Image (cartoon, rainbow, N blue to C red; front, top):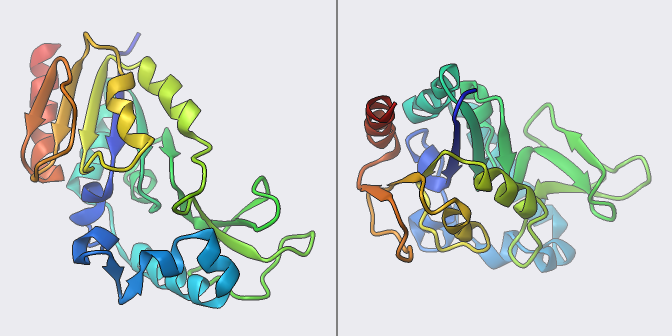
Length: 230
């Protein structure tokens, strides 16, 4: 039976693919403030502005490509049972070939009913407009977990993490909760890797190997260490 690897990825995972984040520019993205485009209150106040913002992001993501780190993670499936839990709303893990991807904060290539969160629809292009509605007449919104909203996949993420034989955290500051707790959900005795070039906010964690580098260089090193362990 293959050993299980759980990869927990954040914004730094997609940075090498050119995907910008709010954090890159002090809480702004293309001159939009978080509170104006990434909360349900913002949606109620001005859904056209919110849709325009996510249309811009969707265009950017559709024009981006998986980077080498995405591909290294996908390639691990040859020898391991790999689960990816990501905070990212892009589909770059899937496009790189990862077959088991859980999106904690939603998926930009999907829309959902404003009134019924269970009504989720794939998007075939970058544009979602005012007047695009579900079959019950509710305006479609981005399938994104906004600030202040519950994270419905958190329980599934915790269950997956508890099964891990190896746990890799990559490109996340570990400042966004409840997702940041996953590193502590993993069993204490397993080997854990933390890849990030910056100073990451984490509590004392057993069996943790910290690799201060960007995603691709970090995943190359992790792949080598996994080969040595096995």
